[in-house]
Structure formats: C-alpha cells, structure tokens
Amino acid sequence: MSGLADPVVVAALVPFRLVVLGASAGGLAPLRDVLSGLPADFPIPIVVVHHLGADLRSRLPEVLNFRSQLPCRWVVSGELPRSGTVLVAPAGANLVLQMDGRLEVVPGPKPRLGWPSVDLFLTSVASVLGRHAIGVILSGMMWDGAAGIAALRRAGGATLVQHPRSAAFPDMPSAAVDLGRADLMMPPHQIALALQILAEAGVH
Image (cartoon, rainbow, N blue to C red; front, side):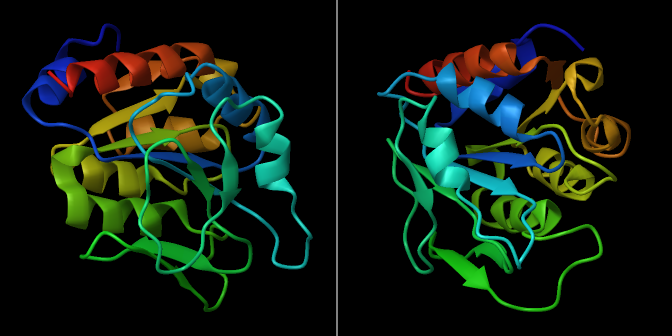
C-alpha cells in the first residue's frame, strides 16, 4: 500500500465532512503526532474515539491540546461536529452519528473490545456520511475498528491505518488492514500529511 492516488480521486469528487481517529493501547503518542501535524485551519471536523476506562478520570482532551493546533474537548451529546475543533468521545459510553449529523453519547454495557467502540462509531459514520468520511485506525490491542473501517470502505469513504511496524500495539491497525482492507498504511506523521492532501483535494 503506497501512494495517494485512489483516496485523492475520491476526495476530488466529493468534499469530506468528518475525520475519525480510532485508537486504544499505545494510541496517545500517534494521536498527538497526527494532530500536531495538522494546521490550525484544517477544514474537516475531527472526532477521536480512544478506548477509556469508565472508572478513570481521563484528561485526554487536555493532553492532546499540548501538541494540537486545533482545540480538543469532550463531545457534548447532541452537538454537530464543526471544523476547527477536535471532539473526543467520553469514557464509559459509546458514540454514534445520527442521521441528522449530530453526535449522540449512548450509555450502555461495555462492549467486548472496549468503549467507546471504534467499530460502532465508524459504522454509524459509514451509514450517514459514506464517501464523505475518512477513517483512521491507530495503535491498539485486539481488533476494534476493523469492522468499522470495512463498512466505511464499502460506503466509499477513505480509510487510513497506522503502519503496524510503527505502532506500540499493532493488533488494531493489523486487523484493519487484514479484515477491513484499509486504503493506505503509513506512520502517524505521514497520516497527518495524507489528511491535509485529502482535505485540499476535496475543496476543488
């Protein structure tokens, strides 16, 4: 997997409306690398879905803000994603994208692969936005995100994966490649560049 030909062709045809960054164990460093590589005027809204323990007082948005030029904060249920902001899915619940484009925090039992579920959110994004969305899978254990990437790819969206050799925990990116058939596989700093190229191509 190399080059940007196929995703850029897609982006040239339709503007992207959402970027989803999915991660779990070992995901903080690549998340920071991706976000630090994006400019303050990056035009596509971003949602981060990172596994978090329900009993932990996470400061994930605050930590991401240290390196990101885009402000990061927790998702508020019922809000619309907006450009210039990174929204982070909260702990102890799942997140879905509703048909009206609003984000909904969904309480419920913990999924087997951890919560917030990357698969659940990406699958909802695929249903609502289809080829207008970009899905990215970063470091993590097991295989959450693979089914979501597969759904997004079937719907025509662009799918990127951290190269497993650059991941502290390669299970999630490897599963996304093997099961989800992601379009591109690259280290985090190159993912940031790819997102900028896709964003720029999508506005022409």
